[in-house]
Image (cartoon, rainbow, N blue to C red; front, side, top):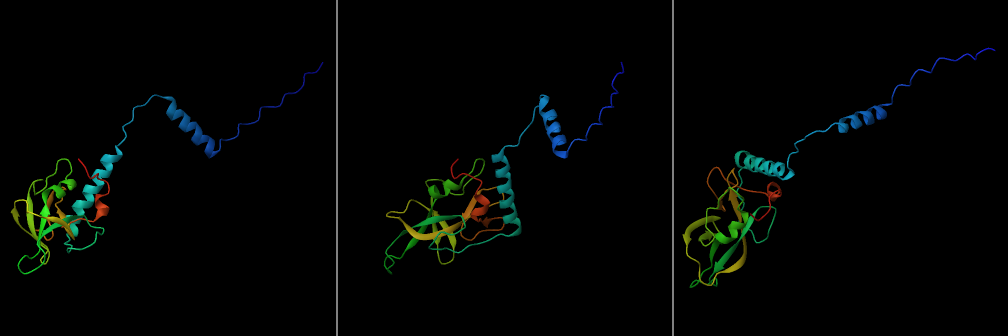
Length: 177
């Protein structure tokens, strides 16, 4: 009896790129591994600080007082008086209102119980005062000034090393501690 002739086995077909990737991925996850993943919030915070620092160094900005909120970080002013010669309007910044922009490890130039006179015509802060009697929120908003570290350093016009800040730089931060 004759044995049948066996044909040699067919050469293996080369794996497709998709099969090679699947094999690689299966191999990677087959061995135990310890991986460190960067916190998304830490990355976002560093990104915002970079934006703030670039704004202070490259494009320090002063924004005028406005009667409507816009894309800049602003604080609503308080006022007293009725606008007459005898009782002209006086405007104030409340330290309590500025505290909402405080971040961990930063400071605000006014304490939460302090008040400061504000001149809407010159867009500048005045002296610190006690709580104004009869003050009410008004429809005037002043830009908040920050330094490169995120400290609230003023309202309106300011010294070198500080800037008004667009909201786009601040979106990664929560408004509470």
